Amino acid sequence: MFYRLFLSLTVVLAAAACSTTDQIHDHDQSHEHHQHSEAGIHAPDTGDLSALEELYWSRLQESRMNFTQADIDFMTDMIVHHAQALIISRLAPENNASQSVQTLAARIINAQDDEIALMQKWLRDRGQPVPIVHIHGLELHVEMEMPEESMAHGEHGHGHHQDEDRHHGHNMHHHDMSHHDDMPGMLTQEQIEHLASLNGRDFDRYFLKYMIEHHDGAVIMVRDLFSVDGAANDTEAFELASDIHAEQVTEINRMQQMLDAIEGL
Image (cartoon, rainbow, N blue to C red; front, top):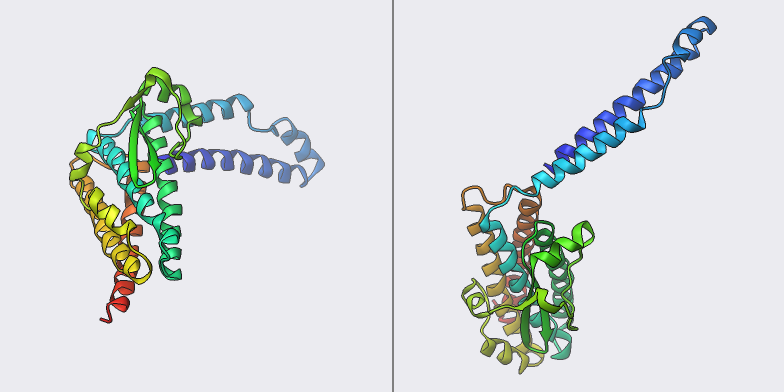
């Protein structure tokens, strides 16, 4: 929907520009024709352009309201799912992982950190509660930024998932993490602590095993979203989920190759 609206606006502007160019070209043909066409040469009316722009943003906002509860649940859960991947990946340099695993972990951090921000913005733009994640060592804590504050951010809202605490007064609510334990691929706290106790080659092996399991879970979550009637019709939601799916599948294949090499398969 976003791209169709953008394309429509672009076509209108291009048509207006072409019309002006044609008229100027006619002016060069003859002095007589110049006298006739001069009165017709004019820049696109700024009022018309303002109206088109206003219509464009109005249609964009309307398109953002085309979402389901399944879309909301997916974004909310995937933010927490991604946050756990950040915890796991941050262990790589601290636990003497191989350079290839450290490079992979850094890529995971960069990609999923950005996707957390995008999913937070998706929720905020639609007036939904936004999970704000705080990572303290091996522990993940989540607060919910409530819609009243979310709407105040408007189009300028940004995802905030840094470790430092933020103070939002009564608009922040502690989020119960218990239901997230049932999400596909989520590691238990015991598994995370086990990984944190390892070093070198042992760390590499379990990091890859756990992260493959974790990525598999994200793939399942995307497939579950797409299986819900009416879900992911929102363009931004569809593109976010599709990108996550493609990224996770690609990394699963890469990690499986790395794990096979470690285990001599």
